[in-house]
Image (cartoon, rainbow over all chains, first blue to last red; front, side, top):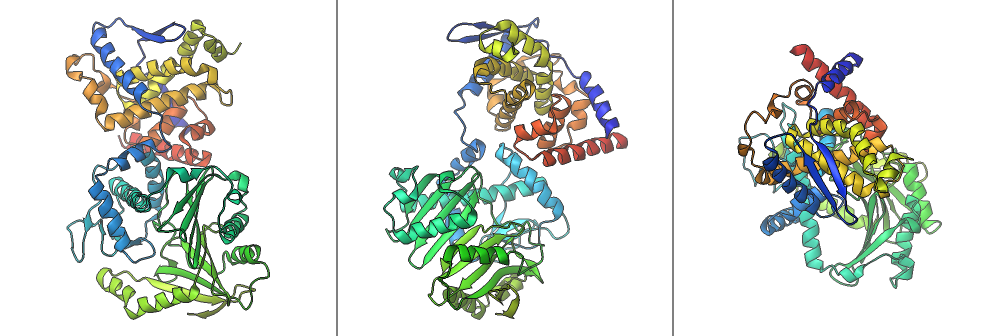
Length: 397
Length: 167
């Protein structure tokens, strides 16, 4: 490597020189850059250069992701609506993939995401098909099943990975736009203040502060509280922004939900870690501690469960799994983790009974079998009861 | 007195000193990113214009080299983005400039060797070898971890070495 570097440095010394110089005449209020050149094409080039300069200076102050924002806002409204409708019609918990991403693809995708932020976009959009269409290409998205079909016998190219990244951003943007339109988000609601200052139901404050305690976040670290009424006064979302994350608390009758996002992009479930084996106990202690912090002695006769989706025998379908604590009060506490992290990325209160009813219905209707027949992908629910004190496996559901 | 402080006080000579120290590196960094001599020269102009405008707000948290190269890098990336959207092409008419002047295509050596790299790796290699920035400084500019920068740099150099062997 040293030898290569030495050689490259030698080549750098042979790179073209800069033949112009700079001369800035400093006026108290303005700067007048004047190029001095010995080139007979000076006049034409200077004009072109000034055009570029003006263009650069006139670019407005960028938001955090100016290139991506610009691209999203340039989408036709019809496309935005179509993507939102398409996604809302799907009844699956996360994106599906016909095979895992390889290690190499995941590594490339990470750098391509960074390039995407800097405005390096795909040349074309991902192909979207409907129903039982079988296109001639081996990389596409099926809008009816919510599944990305990845080629079996080769790696995705950089262009294809860019298409996937771009599509994910477009779907997120479309859903957010539709949500904002439907719920008439009011600018008056955007304020920086502590939730304790607000006249909100006490149980909302308690849930939010309990979640913050579990995550080890101080109230003072939170800014930009944004409150939205979803449909009516009983359904509210509180969103906070920290330096690196967005914390979103959604409250509706019977459900309290907390989710955290990276503030610069909403990470989608791309299955980046789903070749990790299912491990029911890896964060059980963390979840149990979180339960104690949030509920103390209020829980009686509680049971503990582990839930995940698997795409092949013994492996996670995506990088998330959940611990569920069920008590006799009908408000059950869920903690969801990303594989490899030691704090919950989602905390919510929701009915376990309703959840298991839904699982039963999905089984009765053969949802997973249909996916298997159509696409050859075996997706299974794993719901396992654990000993609430030790986290050891008791039974499979 | 620190040269940037002198620039902030309106000392033109100080600005010229910075230009002599860093002008060539800024130009070559821009050339590595943009592969276009004329745009690279504009990067040089714009960089030192901004150095002069922003000298008062220089925080001394990073080295003056890192500060100047960050400005140059950001300008070059802006142009790269706009070039991809073909906005700049509407402003510059290369057809008016005789071929003899457009020798960007004739640049060989370093630019050719880094051409097969992706954009990010090109930037990392250029910032390290041309701008002579440390990996830590590059990580700061590109908003990456130091280990990610090091890894990418090593892989890029290996790739260049392989390409050299094959040819």
